[in-house]
Length: 419
Image 1 (cartoon, rainbow, N blue to C red):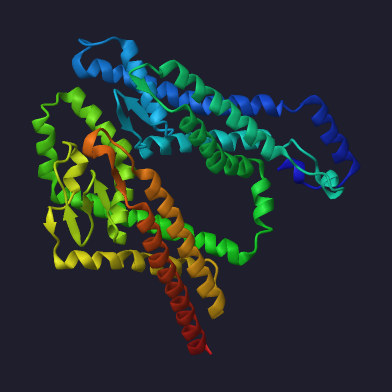
Image 2 (image 1 turned 90 degrees about the horizontal axis):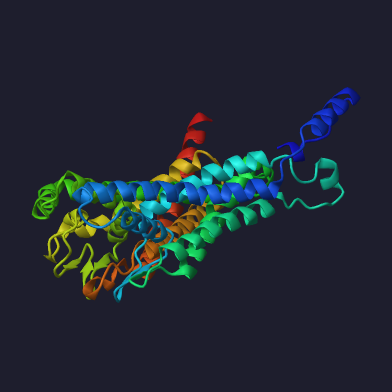
């Protein structure tokens, strides 16, 4: 990060740096950030539009509708990935395909990191910082980046909206700003080198708790994905039967596969809600949990083949609620090796704080994973978010605390044997 490095150690080096600066002026930050933000939104939008046209032609060889219909559907899908929701002839759809949102986040991260590297030379140098001048580079770059992104999103809403299908402009703006702040700002800070300076000022216990939180979340997501995969494998015949009953051609099958991939992260969040205990609903007045499964008719969608059979559950399914606790304990114990300490209080605090943060993070994920998926009963397809939050904080917090303390006990025992 050139703006925060100390000055040259010799007059010759100073003259050399001066000549380089004069010959290679810095590119305008506002221009770079605007282009990066607009490119992040426009790049994924163009990909979605291309897929929409291909999907329109693959479905029935272009026998119905026009290419503009495929473009409009693709644009509406792009907006759904930004939480726009959709009103189609009175039916409300608010479910966000998180797979698409993750693609947007990855694109924002990549271009945000490159933007940070490009503007790393902007802002005050070390001497000006020592004089008390503030460095607003990351803040300004993030704000302009978000403005460019939101501009493309708003234009897409205006062009794609029709009387039959109306996305929510406010939700699109809110989700776009959220992505730019949560993903884009850290990427810009890391790319510019500022993050390395700022994180060095964070106390070690806080960094250790955040590391424990990330380890627990990743471990539990892997567990939830594994549970979903096992359920699908056990009921693979049902999923194949769904596709066969839909009489899909190769083009339709490819579209179904893509749609399934886009909502797979949502299904993983539902699986995690199930493992934590509260479960989820697949329609109004329904519940799917380790202790009770009450379902009515469900749509013919391949992923729904993973749902357990309706009625009383087996006795062993109740034991599944112990898995989140074990994942938190193991993750906290393994993460303790990265930040070792023989202090009981520090280990307990790190593990418990990391587990509580992990419960909050997964509770937020559960809240955004569901919503309305259509008319009638499908107006409520979502995890029981508040209950998931409470169960997650409890299971991860206790598991993280015991995992950290257990690792301290092991290390103290090894130290005593060595002595």
